[in-house]
Every structure is written in structure tokens, then in C-alpha cells.
Image (cartoon, rainbow, N blue to C red):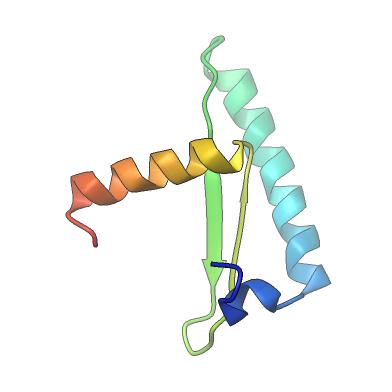
Length: 77
């Protein structure tokens, strides 16, 4: 999807906020999962706009696989 204009939107404040949130989420998961390695993704989007931002502690290929599995379970297309 490199041609998708949503991926061309730069918002440094949102990116900085996502990095802070990711650090917090990763810390909580590390502290509370008793050795289980859990991945996460946080997605933020504009209700009335094209902007879509996300951050994850997973590699892109692993995140794509997890999203595909989620959509399959939820009946998404």
C-alpha cells in the first residue's frame, strides 16, 4: 500500500505520542505477563479524515499475520 495517501501523512506530535504509549504498553506487558512474549499494535485514526497511524512492538510481517488472523476470526474482508 505504498501508494495509499494515508501513509504519506506526517504528524510528528502523534508519532511522538505513539512512541510514548508503546513504551508504556510494552513495559506493562513485560511486567505483568510472567515471561510470556506478547505482541501489540495500537492504531489511531481520524474519524473524518484519511489519517491512520499505528505502532507495534512486532515486525511488520508478524503484525500483518496477526491482523489477517484477527480479520479472519471477525469475518472482516
